[in-house]
Image (cartoon, rainbow over the protein chains, first blue to last red):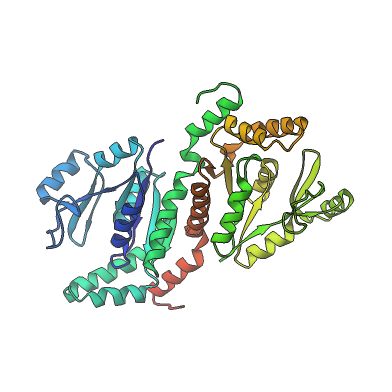
Length: 207
Length: 207
């Protein structure tokens, strides 16, 4: 059975990163795709774990070679998903999680219509606004860009397959785990197994 | 939000009834649709809980009045799903589980294409055969009918949305729970909520 590509989106401040980190701990056979970015590394971030931090020149060289499954400029910086990591793991039967923005998700949807698109939403926009303001670590101009971006992203929810409203972190984590588990039971992902049953019933045993 | 109809199928002996009983205990807002049947009540069965046991005459009168959402003759007896129970609960926002045979499921699919179809499968046909023979409570003729029916039912797996292979009862229960949970997060089931977000973002607050 091939793996499945899960694209997880949602405005920054909705709790996406915390949810994904916990999900990865609690379920087997899922890997996280680390994106490349040209934005500067923040103090707590680890190169190769949170992102691969590369120069704009290097980024554009990789774009040219077709090495990104999707890429986009967000808040002035470039972000891209390395294609080979995703494709290798899916071929090996692993599920792959992408944490990307809505723009990137829509672009993945064009090339991988069978991917599963999950939107992590805040309980409301005003709640998200409070969360972003409460952080208090950013310059006002950055906050305004973030809010404007969140508004834009919230308008695209219905392009997704699932929406998980993060009004309770534990429940949101469990819902994302349920989505991964349910998707593995889709008939379309078990056609080999179903074929085996048919062969056995017809008397052409293959077990 | 309206409720969702879940049709759970699978050959007898695959463990469907045990799974459904446990699922109903562990998740809120789900009701079980009790079928009507003309087959004789078995000693451990409770009228109105396992089935509504009615006469063939009464059954056919209800067929005539359109009171069944689906009905079928299986192993010589009539089985039917009362329509009003299902429709009332779905309108009230409850999920409804139907435990019916493949023939009934295919007939529901025609009228309710948006229902969710789950197939509970044994690990293999030979495993199912062993389980049925091991019961040792039935006449040989009944066993042969049951095996023949199981073979027939196994050929229709790919008409379903999900397949849950019951090689481990606890895991099968958790998978069915995950399917119910995931389905509640489908964007198509949360359009009202998404509309609220859009109104708020556009400044027409409706919360």
